Each structure stands twice: as structure tokens, then as C-alpha cells.
Image 1 (tube, helix red, strand yellow):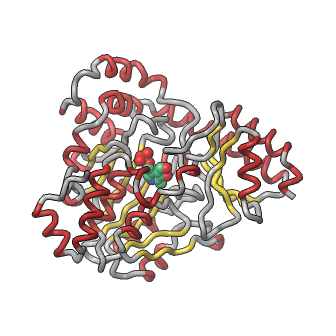
Image 2 (spheres, rainbow, N blue to C red; image 1 turned 180 degrees about the vertical axis):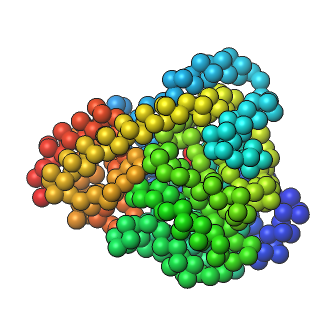
Image 3 (cartoon, rainbow, N blue to C red; image 1 turned 135 degrees about the vertical axis):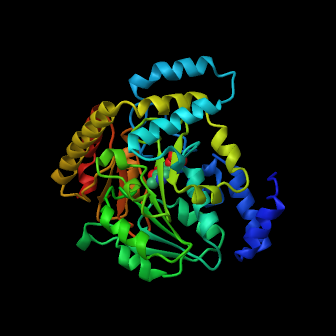
Length: 393
Ligand SMILES: Cc1ncc(COP(=O)(O)O)c(C=O)c1O
């Protein structure tokens, strides 16, 4: 049972052109809160998803872009203390400590930061808050599909601009603007999921300066820390139409703990707060908040995980290229691998070797996304490649 949206929110959505049926669907999305994996656009895909999938015990999971180990060791004592305090709801001080820690890490004002239980919720909210049946969504293709699911389910016009090898699989920002010059939201994931390729800050700045009034540019930096590249938060001072999203689900090893951040001008954050936004941002997990706060104070561990990921990725790439298999140069914990044939039998063969690899995108049906694992995961991956070498020819 989904609670109806408050009358003023329904009115506002009606004024933006949403039908009663679409408003009902928006209530369902926002009411779902953190269980985005259960949303209608994920149905039938549960086997390829990090969330909701079931795998044989001891499988090596290279399908969900999670980190291979848990939270930062330096943050665990704070997490343990918080666990013992788990009888208490999150206090304002604990929430504020996370905000201050993120502000110090990124050298931005705390007022620009809102915490969430992961970044899926604010990501869905951005589409609902800034798109409409007349103000579409523009993204690259392939990219992280959650925003596509929301747009398609709400019948919001969706333009997908293909990534091209000619420009290093970066977002082609000029083509994105041309694809729909009147969109409500432009979405860039950098490093991009599933390619791991980075769009330069100068291109992000160009798009932010050229999109129409009242539109927003959402930059999803879920994988930023793997790349060591500068963040789009440096543009927040000059671009009041920019929203940067972060998650602790990847390099920080906290996917199951649920913590994310949106970084944007307070006006935009307010627009994302409709319905139960306030509830979502204040009812965070206490251990997750404590661990997130402490992790951001440990840049050495960020660097260490980045280097390890880079090394393990290189070993996987070398192993694949040994069999003549091409990968796209990635700056994140994933590789897009082109088998040059339908991946189904290869995915099955990996599973028979105890390794679950990731999904394909319809624009590149011969490619699979594979998450970079630990050194021992990578060793098992290379052994599995050896076992199935005839299949790879
Ligand atoms: C690009 C991107 N953004 C957002 C998310 C959502 O992550 P979470 O809700 O765990 O923060 C993911 C998860 O895979 C992702 O790849």
C-alpha cells in the first residue's frame, strides 16, 4: 500500500503536466525509499542485479561493481560504537558530523550537502523533480540505467546519445544538448558505468552553462574515487543548476550499509525533498553514518584501494587481451569486455567456474561488464578464462 502524495505536491506535479496515473506511479517510486531494486523496471532482471540476485555459496561476485571487501578498517571502531548505540535514532549531531566530514573532504560548504540512504533514492528523485512529460531526460548510452527506468515508467521523453570510440567514450556534451535542447535533466555518470570512462570537467562545465533555464545537470560520481580525477563539485560555486551525486557503496565498501550524498545548491536540494525526502535524509542508519564520517577522514585508504583496483584491473585486462579480447580503457572498478559474440554461453561458463560476471547493454550486445575483484578473485578469473579458452575463440 503506497501513501498518496500530499495535495500540494500532487498539484505541483499536475501543473508540470503529469497525469493522475503518472502521479500514482511517482508516489510508488518515492514511497519505495531505499528498496529501488524492487521497482517495476528491474523486474525480470533480478538474476543480473547486485541486489536481489541469488547465487551459489562462495561465488565470486564480479557483477555488481561492489568493492571486494568491507568498510575502511580505520572506520570500524566508530561503526562498532555506533552499533552498540543502535537502540537510538540518528541524532542531528551525527548527521551533521557526516556533512562536515564530506564538506572538509571536498572543500565545499556544508550547506551544499544532503545525506541519503544510498544514492539510488536521490537519483530517482532528480528525474521526478526536474523532468516531466514535456521536459525530457538526456543521457549517454550505455550508462547506468536507473534514470532510464524512471523516465520510461513515467513516460518522460528520453534521449540516449551513444558513446563513441572516436572521443574515448566520453560524454559528447554538444550532442547531448542537441538531442533535446529543452530537456529538464541531463545526466552524466563520470566515471561512467559501465565503461569506467571519465568526462572532462571542462565539458561538464560547458553543458552546465548551455542547458536551458530550469534544467539541471546531474553528475553521478559513484566511481569518482577510483579515478583520482577532479570532482564536478568544483563547479558548484558557479553553476547553480548542477547536482553531484556520490555513494559509499563502491570504493568505501558500504553497499549493504546504504549511504550516499547529494551535493548541490540548497534550492535544488529543496526541490528534491518532496514527499518523504525529509524522512529519508534524517532516518539514516547510525552505523553507516558513523562509518561514512570516519572513512572520509582516511584519504590514505582511498588511495590504497584506488591503487589496488588499478593493479587488479590491469591483470584482468592483460589476461583478456592474451585471448585477443578487447576492453575499453577504464578508470573505475569495472571493465567493459567485448566477446564479439553473444555473451550468454560465456556468462554461463564463468558461473560454472564459480564466477558471476555482469550484464550487457542493448546498444553493445556482445559486451559484458565485469567488476574488478580482489587479487585472489582476479586469479580465479584468469584460471576460469584458461578453463574456457575454446569458448573464447
Ligand atoms: C552510477 C551509479 N549510480 C548510483 C548507483 C546506486 O548506488 P547506491 O544506491 O548503492 O548508492 C550505482 C550502483 O551501482 C551506480 O553504478
